[in-house]
Amino acid sequence: MRITLRQLEVFTEVLKSGSTTQASQQLALSQSAVSASLTDLESQLGVQLFDRVGKRLVTNEHGRLLYPRALSLLERATEVEQLFQAGNGALRIAASTTIGNYILPQMLGNFHHNYPDIPLEMSIGNTEEVVKLVSEFRVDLGLIEGACQSSELISQKWLLDEMVVFCSPEHPLAKIPKVTLTDLQSAPWILRENGSGTRDVLNHLLFASLPGYRIEMELGNSEAIKHAVMYEMGISCLSRRVIEEQINNGSLKEIKVEGLTLQRTLYLVYHRQKHVSDALKKLLTYCNAEHLIGNFS
Image (tube, rainbow, N blue to C red; front, top):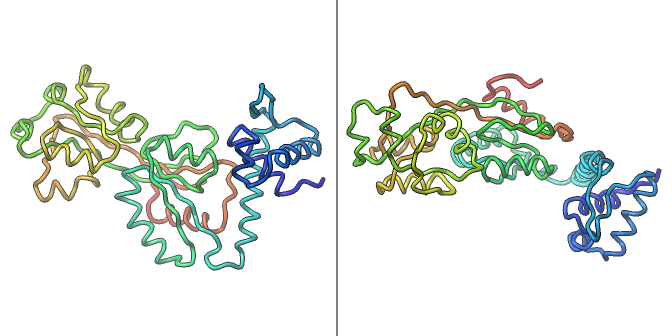
């Protein structure tokens, strides 16, 4: 067996792009070199890793089986290269918007204080985007605002998070002592986009009980929603962590709805076939000790 890391690198790039041309551009190789490397790898393994559909390469069952193992080997090779370099490689974390902006800064600050030699890289997107990054092994760990249904990922309960319906202090609902679901039904709503964890939770926990509710606007981040509500464009519902400062200073008003409690679970996710490095083990142990609802298996 004479499989090389270069062959595995070529294979993973071809799989991600579906094209030897794009893979050659990513790897700064000629297209013929990429094709030859892929052919050699398939010859040594004795199987085809892709189905040839016209000019496209479509991953088959053999390619899907090899992909996470190839990525794991490449990650370990990177660890070897960085073994004697300062920092030993960064932990890559992706978080959904509320977590990345309002929870992780303090958490990662504390983690960095305890482990100053472990560099961290963080990206922020909606829950759907974070799950995709974890599934593609582009990050080591994801923190999301809703349950993950992917069988490829390990999903652990992490934190409980309270959701709060709110409006501007001048909004008519701010003057009502006892707000009901019927009152909410006729109000214009300003919401996160579909695909965000916040929106998914509201669709399930709240809007299933509000048939015919009216969406005034969809915005891509919580800060924009807060400002839109302040300027009386509608009402919304976000994590208490997001609006706590504005509730306390009076620029936003919490709407307490009779019989309504909105609470969601935040989750920690990583790939089942992910190579868990020493640095990642430290972060998982830290989450378990400081924040986790349940226990890691």
